[in-house]
Amino acid sequence: MTIIPFDKKYIDEKRAKAMPMIQAKNLWKKYGDNVVLERMNVSVKAGEFITMVGTSGCGKSTFLKMLLGMESPTSGELLLDGKSIRSEPDQSRGIVFQQYSVFPHLTVLENVIIAREFEHSPILGKLFGSKKRKVVDEAKALLESVGLTHAINRYPHELSGGMKQRLAIAQALIRQPRILLLDEPFGALDPGIRADMHQLILELWREHQLTVFMVTHDLSEGFYLGTRLWVFDKLRRDNQAPGAYGANITYDLPVTRRKSEVPYELQTIAQESQDF
Image 1 (cartoon, rainbow, N blue to C red):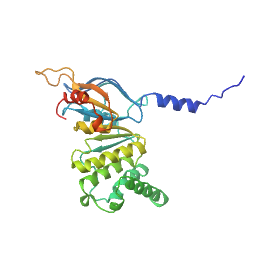
Image 2: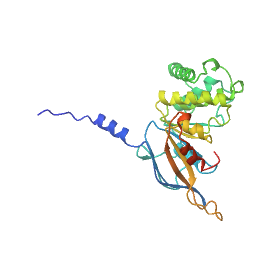
Image 3: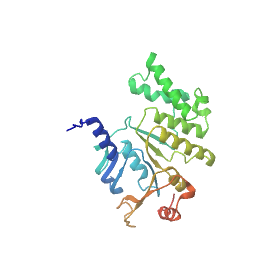
Image 4: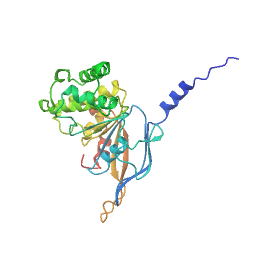
């Protein structure tokens, strides 16, 4: 009889791929008497691209902050790899906001390497010698991938809006996160620049094997970029007490990344949540 050796590492890797990366279990978020999210139950596998749409104030950005660790659940669970998400941001999660989070007194290159410098040297925020050269090389390679090689010595005030957003993305990716969180990152950009940024983010998603969560008010953008589109809305309402009930994911739609292939009925369903 042939004995097949037990490969624990292989089994663990297969199990990790099979289980959800992110799980929300009966998740609630309240601020005092104001219920923002209620009874959320959802799971996401590694490598998915989740786009989130819905009315202003329906909890999309709050959920993003909970994934980042800036906010904690009021009740229920939000899990990463089966464990509660840490109550502070860490290396596994990077975020890009609509407002560019860049340091005005630093060059493009310095803006990217500073995160790694504080990671390796929390007190001084500086690296020297071979460690410094290694981080600089990583930053230059990343800036090349986002199309900013020609601007590495410029300061933020010398950059266009699209270039600043590329810089913000490079800042988020320098720490090699597993999860990228995008909070309306392209809302302030002109349509032509947004189209370029769409292609860039899809290329980076594939290249870095990221799991992405993105808030957007542009319905076509949500359909085009995502592998799943979540519509946030309230299932229950009380006009006398607007904060009594929270939002949930009312539609979880598998979508295509070709705008021309988006079924009309799916657009109609999402538009029922208004104000995108």
